[in-house]
Amino acid sequence: MKDTISSTFILLLALTIIAAFLALNVSAEIMATAVVTLALIKFWLVAFQFMELKKAHPFWKYLILGFGGLMGIILVILL
Amino acid sequence: MNNTKSIYYPPGGILIWIIIYLELITFGMAILALAYYGSEERELFHSSSLKLNKTIGTINTILLLTSGFFVAKGICFFKAANIKKALFYFNWAMLGGFGFLVLKSFEYYEKLEAGLHMDYNSFFRFYWLLTGFHFIHVLVGLVILLVITFSIRKKQTEASFEDIEASASFWHMCDLIWLLLFPVLYLLF
View 1: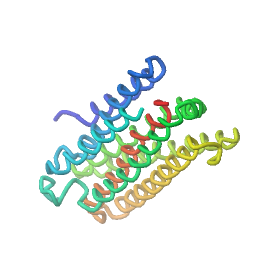
View 2: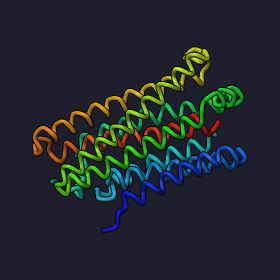
View 3: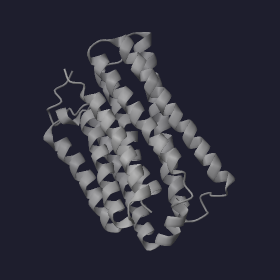
């Protein structure tokens, strides 16, 4: 059986370090979109893999995808 | 164990998911308000954000993610009826959560020493309210994990699988909130 929890965790750590690096080294215009996108990927990884939403009814999956997507779009517009 | 494919039985049960969405919406609205005021007062929010310690913020993110990872592993072992290993992972998860609280308390102490309290400016009002409420959630999550761990240890079948999974979901919810809060407060202004 593949250990998806461990691989998800390694991916989450990598994305956290990449986000911190981008925040320090990239221009403000690109940075906002990049950091919000990375945050959303991490948000969905935790929800789907750690909280096992991948096994849930599509209603719960679309709700978390919709919430994250809406937050991301509004944040990018505002920032 | 319930059928998680049913709309009425998401992992951990429907009640915890109603709470999770209510919390996400509440924090989400406050984060959007922070972003809105930040777009109105860019200079103020930028200079205030520079006063936050990004290294502590990043370490705290790693601590919460690591703790969430241990909880997810603990759930896997609990499902496989390997109680000893499940307890081992839950203990490490609590240690991660405790580490988060200690580091956050140190950060709060630093801010108070520097005079960056809630009335300092609008950015720090958001900082204290949002991170303060999140701190309380982590504290509550830690107590829930502690109770569940004791319950499993005391009599191994006392806590039902759904109780354990709901507690884990609450803990992961703290991760979810922090994953939205951290970039907006520490990185984006």
